[in-house]
Image 1: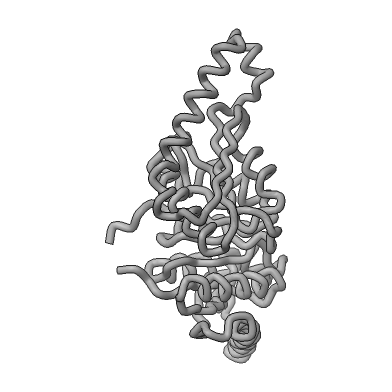
Image 2 (image 1 turned 60 degrees about the horizontal axis):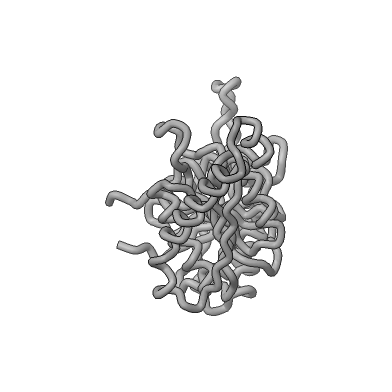
Length: 291
């Protein structure tokens, strides 16, 4: 069953408030409702398990979380009046709360940075945790981005096919061009020459890579005739190229893991590098749900 709800995690930071606005706009484009979720912790730190937080302090913490939700909800309703917005406050650590919420969500949105220090609910580690372990797609909001295209990175994996599908859908909804980035080696051309590959061999490899990309996108043209496509097929590290071509992007789309690395890693090195360096919202596409 397709979920009808987008969930956005907030913590009172400016980044989280901006993420809530982005999530409201996404909900409006997609015809979804929006749940604004704040988590608060009442357990003492692991190094002081015997410490009991007084109830009056817990009440203050919860009240602050409720105020943050109300503020974000008001901003979301102002941004997208047609969207059904619900606020929710949950006791628990932010990462597990958002991961649990992802089971019934169409999309989970988090800010890339939070309040910092002890109160930092959405520091980078939380965004990475949610992107890695959520069962729904995740957007890590790293900034508003620019007026440019949707950028998607693809390789030869099944998951990159899902990323490409999501990218076409987003480009169509946003009314913008889709830039498809494929790197056929992690090495630049100069480095490849150093391994004894001549110009003809390099050209053959490049031609084969272009054919792979053409095959990947061929099936989407009829479904999304309104989306203009630009192809970038180069020898280089994928994260480098994705960041470079997403400097003015509205959205950057990646798979949670690709053809390389170990199957047990839930978030590949390229996705992690992109999440740390991107300046626009990053959509992390997940494997198809089994339920």
